[in-house]
Length: 135
Image 1 (tube, helix red, strand yellow):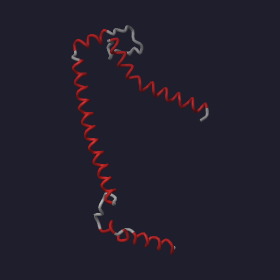
Image 2 (tube, rainbow, N blue to C red):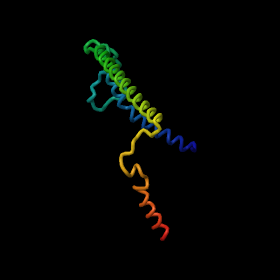
Image 3 (cartoon, one colour):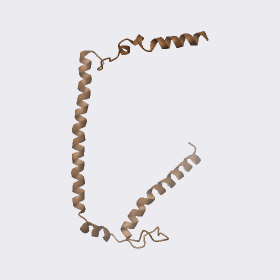
Image 4 (tube, one colour):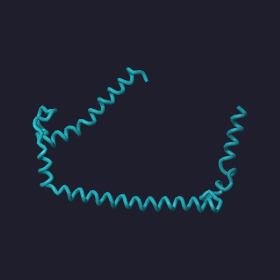
């Protein structure tokens, strides 16, 4: 890639990144300053930072309880997925191993055309080949 093209790609990616990260900056700025979010024109730079809002929220909302609940739910979900996925993996490998020992592919043919390959699609293919050769 040429240097001018690489610079253009990087500039475009940087501009898109700034646009995508702007809402996160806005939330962080508003939470630290406590400014009115509906004021017009909006201030892009914070005037006065007050981290005490986080301390107030810590005391007014049972944040620790919410974190504990989230951890408990996450542990239960991960344990359930681990058990279910381990059982599914065992069933899949055990079935494949049994089929390998028995000398078959693991699936029994269910229709007549699957048992006899020439009974299904082969005559149509032969007819198409003959028709293409005569043209």
